[in-house]
Length: 146
Image (cartoon, rainbow, N blue to C red; front, side, top):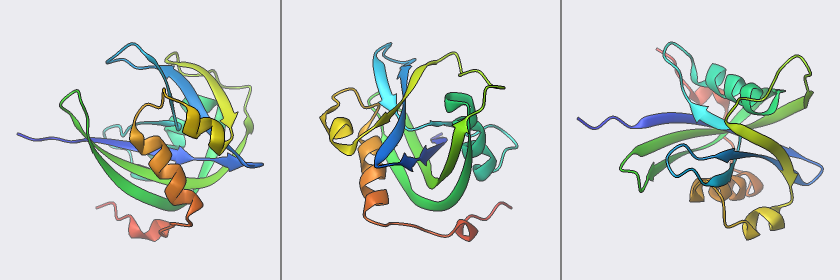
């Protein structure tokens, strides 16, 4: 039976830079760069998931404002990922939280630096940023939780 993994991610931009997390891939053990992102947990809404994942991976509170897109990736590990990517506003680091143990550090990077980075977690990372910069936005009301 085919069961895709559902993930959520946040595209965060401030002062012309994008927030990425540096992490160790569990499947390859390589150091990779990704948007704050992760798996949707049971019983959690899609918006709750992206807010939680962003806080866990950056120690910053994220407020989703729009859906940038839905992305399907058939990964080399045999899994299929469906990724809901949001854009919105992000606060400063909240010292009441610690980074998720899988996160090495966070970075605010220019688009040029991201494009030159050979260690992006997947092609989705840059694809989401390109869509965001192209102005792709869908209202949050498009999401229906039944």
